[in-house]
Length: 274
Image 1: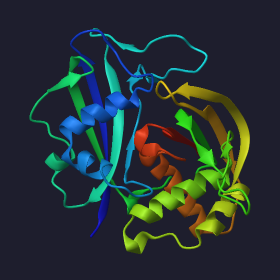
Image 2 (image 1 turned 90 degrees about the vertical axis):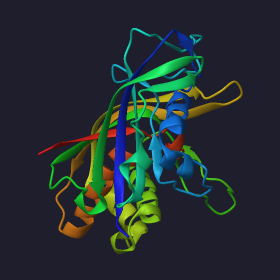
Image 3 (image 1 turned 180 degrees about the vertical axis):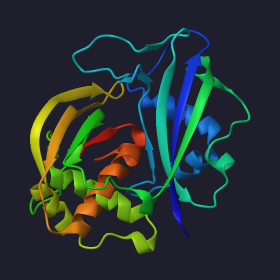
């Protein structure tokens, strides 16, 4: 059965001032639990590369996060408008009311207040429609902390995290997620080759990146990177591999990159220069 990628952009306000957790994606997940049967079903599964991605809460396109060197407490105010996104990979024939229920515009008990849904935008894509044509350059904006990990190696039981968007790690994380969730006919063969190919195709020409440590909860702090990078795309003769990399970078806008995408990490925006 064909698979579709459904992306929700939810805009809301709260009925009174509230304090929220230091990692605001927990608010996004709470609202989704109340309005999406499919989100509840997917989030309860225990599998690698879950077919779901959730963003933190945004205020004026800025994610609400608490960094380790800050003492501020995150608040939501009733006079302000907030938003977040959620992407789910579902069967093409799944009724839209299973993805999101629009029967009620109020969500009860969101950290002591009601969330009033102002707008729900729905974007649906098929895997076969993903891609960017033949741009000359790609800019990736990392909107929430990215957790890129090298694979385990010999005596090292766990891979280490990398604080720079190395193309092979970006594409490798996307191939793994793609192959775990796409239709069988859309499987990408030779993923290791495509990841290595990306290192030669995507050449960093400018960047503004910053290592960040964010507070996830009272006990856990997580380190990643945020910012942006611009890649010049080198001319190549392998058109099929080029198209696959472009499809994966488009896919990244829906599912994110790196680890823990279902909990708010690795959210990206991709733009092209032609």
